[in-house]
Image 1 (cartoon, rainbow, N blue to C red):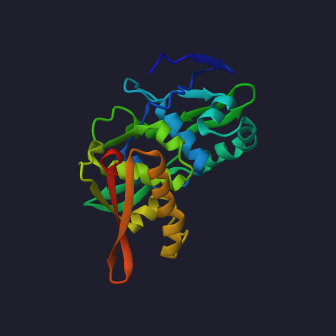
Image 2: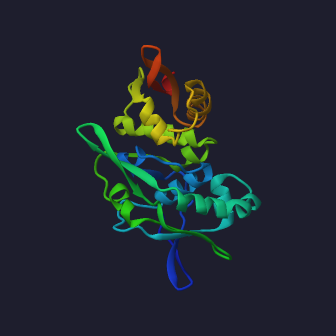
Image 3: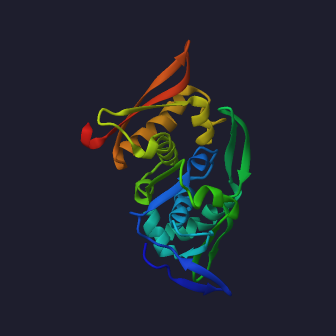
Length: 252
């Protein structure tokens, strides 16, 4: 990543956003596996902020991104960003991530962590954002149990469920190691519902399939390096887990 430029905003130092979407979003698997309720553009802004973190960072820095640069990243018009920016920043502030605490392979509880300590639109400057210091263990000095993917892969997605299931699947595959003949990843329906903020949405499985699973599959197949399909794991007549099958497109 190129040297980051800084600017003073109301007496506070902020760093300009790096806009190179070929850079990696790197997160601890435990952060990816938490409950998240952000909407599509809010999810993309948070992942764009996480992409700013570099390996040598020892702290989480404050950043600023202009409305025009944010519009380019989100692939929408500046007019729409001006219209929606308050909703985006409010969504990020109001919807923390819930990181699961696991003991003996079972979820014990969820720990609520706000995404940001600051996220606001500053007229004449853009969006000022600083990730919450409590996220440092999940973003800095990661040596194992982490996942990375290029920012451009999720920015191109048009469904927040596509983003969530894509990164959940990535976190289940050791270093993106998919053999030539493909790889199965089995995830319980309960975990998928929790991660996609669908514990109370789409209670009928048919609706969950249409609104979440099929949309995620279509987006992953459209923009990622994977060809993804899925089948069901059942107990009796009930679907209890999803068996995802991933194969690199060049091996399809």
